[in-house]
Length: 284
Image: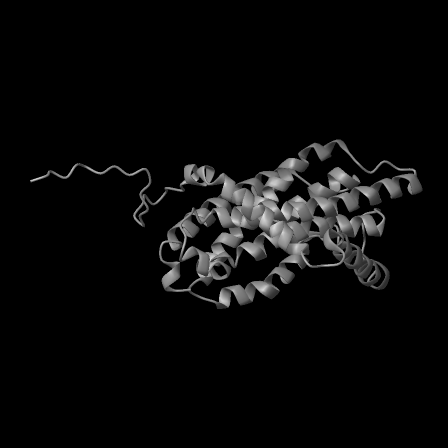
């Protein structure tokens, strides 16, 4: 009788894991797949369009024009002595990247249920690809902001950029982590309760007005200002304006608070996402 030898496996796929096992090593192992997903997300955005990547410019330009007319001309809201087009486009560029990461990540389970149910790969690859691919749109819009800064610097004979621009990479990292972390929480909960995804549609719009996008934080005072500072994106937007435009209301508490909230949101987002991914196919 032939004795069966022990079998050894390179990879074992199981839904049993340690609660705090984030499997980051597997994500790194599948980095080639991450690159493919990033390329797919970017190409699919402008494929079969006439203007292609130019659409990235059109959105902030028209939004800025509308904001200048509505909030600058009609409502006469303060822009902290910054030219209105510069003030609004800086806020729009910052908010657009954060909201893109949040909204697109919030439907990861629903949008990719078919592929998740057939092929195994670390599910965290998908939200990571969304966050990274959204950077392309962000940097294109940032280029538009830089062009406008140069134009107004020549026109106004004024230097807008300050030394605080060195914090820009950290701000991008915070926006990416915060947007993805919140998106992971939403997609995990909405896999069972679809109402959450529907609430996010207009909830993100309300959140924008709780962020100093169309008004400077310096124009707000009292308890309302304290409430607005509880929004971590408030500090991010003000830091962006401080670095690129030389105006912004920022303090040490706001910076520390924003960093801590971002870390907590991302930690619990990944934790809940990894927990739900084991059974979401049964509820989606």
